[in-house]
Length: 153
Image 1 (cartoon, helix red, strand yellow):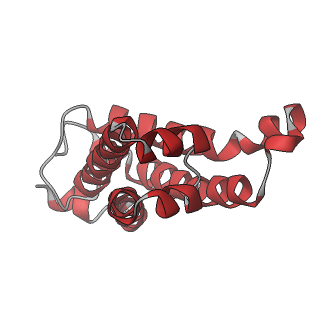
Image 2 (image 1 turned 180 degrees about the horizontal axis):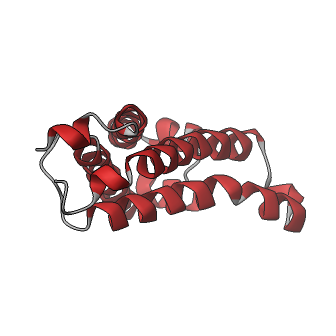
């Protein structure tokens, strides 16, 4: 690991983003452990929850995949902050992760304009929360950009 990366101005933002992704990953695992009530509380589609209650494991598999992806995203944030070894395509990965979080957070606006009946308190809060994740990743990536180049790591 390079001192330059861990001392970059974006490290703090990326560490925050990484911990936020870890928290989201653990919440997804919590849904599996907590069962249908947790899935409902965290906004899983009712049709998927009913299938889960009938013994269909699809919701569990999908939730495990999401938790795994979020954990990988956390690893990219920690790698960008110099806390883990450099991961492949680090800058590209951080840009893509930032974009996904930001687009998911901002998707509330067109959704509300197009189908306002789908905008409920959960949708608003989850969009705002994910927008914070995206800002942490984007600011961290932007501020650490030069330190993240392959030459400096």
